[in-house]
Amino acid sequence: MDFSQLPALNASLNMASAFLVLLGFVFIKQRAITAHTIAMLGACLTSTLFLVSYLTYHYFHGSIRFQGQGWLRALYFVVLISHTVLAAVILPMVLATLWQALRGRFVKHAAWGRVTLPVWLYVSITGVVVYWMLYRLHV
Image (tube, rainbow, N blue to C red; front, side, top):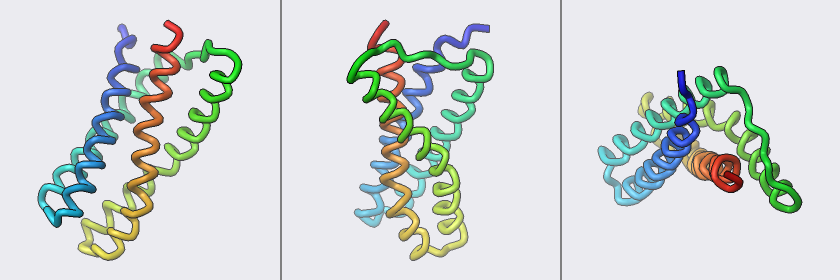
């Protein structure tokens, strides 16, 4: 089975998640609750699909070694390490934020959301940056 297209799919799903999170933010600022809900559930769906695809790829393919050197290599590892640490943290944050909304605790949901949103955006965007640096920069 050929899994070579999964990294590009993963980057696309990360970008879609970032877009939907930003869209959800715009909608809630406009007090468009239904649109906010749809955008955020879409972000949850694309992030879930990303996680499944990412784990599948790495289960069957393993890791890819970064080929860059010098300052670019240092930059790659700064981005990768910060991305990886925050990626481990974002899942429980998203679940806690979502849980508060599902329970109708919107004040707590908003408080969680203020912290979750920038972390989720950072993880989604740096996921695309890591993909680009790893698979496109030195091809």
